[in-house]
Length: 126
Image 1: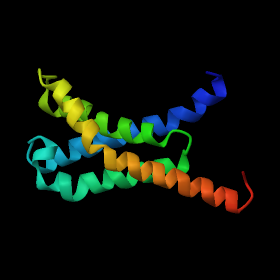
Image 2: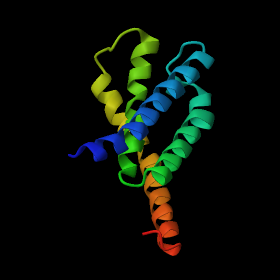
Image 3: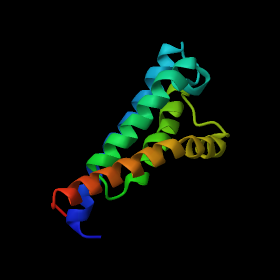
């Protein structure tokens, strides 16, 4: 991997990870300390926002759109650990569940990256 490639992948990874952690912690806090996905606000607010962020990252950084979505959703596990104050023994199951619910975010990111590429091709930007 060359240095320019590494530089180009760091910002979306950091944005995705920070967004996932913040979304989890904010939703958990708003739910009175419960796990975020147990709160109605997770599914009605945080989850759609997460998918929208995945789409934006896929559009802005089309080279690895699925990765940004997976990082965003899997980083919510870190938010879970922070809010719970412990890792717990069910973290592998949590990773699987977060990977499964990341699929719409992956799809949104991939579609947005294709839209970006089509837009660039239409304008002759290659």
